[in-house]
Length: 86
Image (cartoon, rainbow, N blue to C red):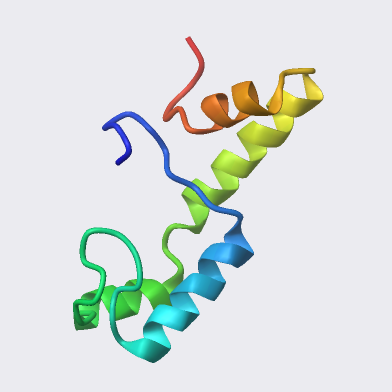
């Protein structure tokens, strides 16, 4: 489970694919609610892909860190940080 100050991002088209599958099945397919029915609100979230801002921010930070010469593990850690570097 992610810590409070950790971003959980996916490559945007992978999140969209997963959301489409969940929306068609009308049940949660991963996480704590796996197997439970989607509420109208949750189905709406999956239709709107409201998490795309976080996905794009994480992907940008990951690619920037790789371009700076960081290792993949270090880039992943950096991309999951919420907020600016300190």
